[in-house]
Image 1 (cartoon, rainbow, N blue to C red):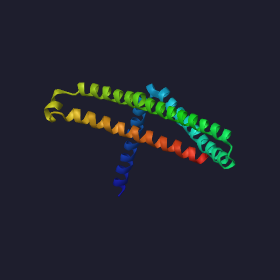
Image 2 (tube, helix red, strand yellow):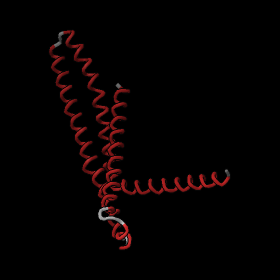
Image 3 (spheres, rainbow, N blue to C red):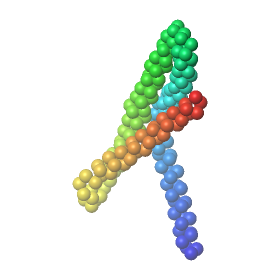
Image 4 (cartoon, one colour):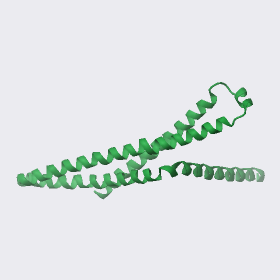
Length: 168
């Protein structure tokens, strides 16, 4: 029993060290795009602010409709159109920043590093493995990272939407 617990402790320690090393690598890939990440979150929060204004303006619109205040209705419709346009703009910029800067640069950085690692592999390793094994691993690992980035992006969008609902 004691040996098992020592082995488990050693495995847990090794797993923690690997996790720290992987987090350090991920942060190294994210450092070049930190400004884009900040813009991504700024536009996400801006979109939350804009979307909070929409139901408030909608309530004023319905109030003006019940009072038959046509001048107020016209102003409210113009405000709602402006809010809608700003919302579309913030979502578009946020999506563009994510797909063309964050996702693209991070995955390219990872693929470049993997290619450098492949170039350092000995000829014997190529003889032992089947044709295409390294490329399949390269694409598989990059796809896994892209999927993780997509999940993070989706979760942050859900967080922004939840924040908007909470504030409204």
